[in-house]
Length: 475
Image (cartoon, rainbow, N blue to C red; front, side, top):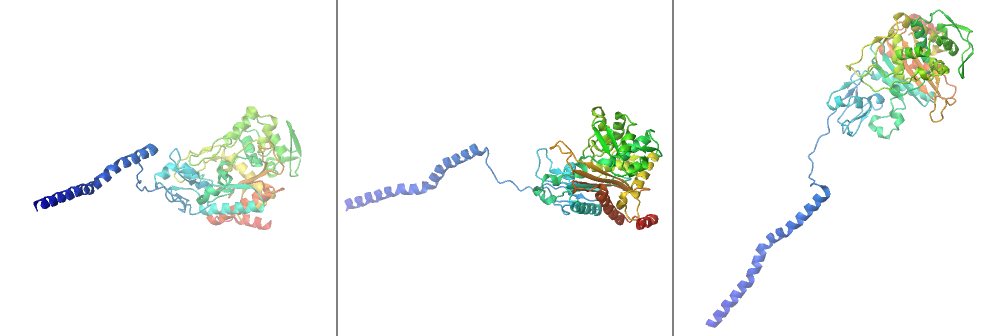
């Protein structure tokens, strides 16, 4: 019995001993898993550090930076929203002026074109930018420009409208156009602000500045008569007149008939350096005195490089380049009795002071010549009913850098003018390029000026002149 008990006791002990390692293993299993996992986790973390440099954790949500609005002169919203959700509620209206923004650039800006770029710092700080643009006049300019381009099968064009006394830019239209909400799908040519940036040879709209220079310098009297032969040879080029006229012309009729040969006889009264200096005095070949928009200076080659036909070409608006905005600013000198008022695009922006370019007498004399030019020529179709207009056309060849020449039937058609002529409120330049063959500025640019100007008169409520209404009705 004792043996049996001893045997059972030993068996129980063996069973107890045989169970003990299993229990110990069960108790140690979590610790073993942890101990085994630690090297694996460490290896994975080490691999991650080796591949990426640092562990990646979820970034906190950051709201897109706020951005100020861009407004028209009456408070119409042209651009709003933060940088991630920028919206242009008026779509293509004033798109070339407003521009657009996008992803942050290496220099820290978001604005890519137009006011979005020029005033990026202020917009990033949440400031609103109010433009001088009148949305009603801007819409009228854009609509009428597109209609004229479609009618005359032109390739591109632009309109600039200034408030004469202040230089405020009331409208600046360019075609082709684009919607800044979807600017990525637009070709680069559609995005360019042609009104501010396109440098082109303007043609005969330059002639009044040569006349004014001669009058102001005392080299010519307004009552003189000038020889105006059908053709004139200067250097290696023969210049011709298009419209038939008398063999001699009064100065005002030189502009009325846009006589190239008479202008060439007049310009010989200047040495090349003198004519060059006078054109720079009007602002040609120089950056406009304005700080709230990016513009181009046009082109006026150094007079030392001129050959004889260059002075002749510059006199009639070839071999010299300007922009529609620069041309409008120069014409505002005649509107403001000889004072150049720098253009202005942003309300409250600091602008350089106005300065005198011509005497009051000379500027008024030239303005009266421009009234005569409109009312006594084929430009009668540019007259705004009931309002007297002063202005001049220009039809100029377009140079092709690729071809190295002026191709046939490549033209720019321009009308530059102001109204009411006795005390102008508005200065406007309209320009179209590459119209269908046979088009002239009188047929194309003049009627476009009238169409837009009529909408300005209706919008502003300018009272018609009874005599002008009667004269218009009689034509």
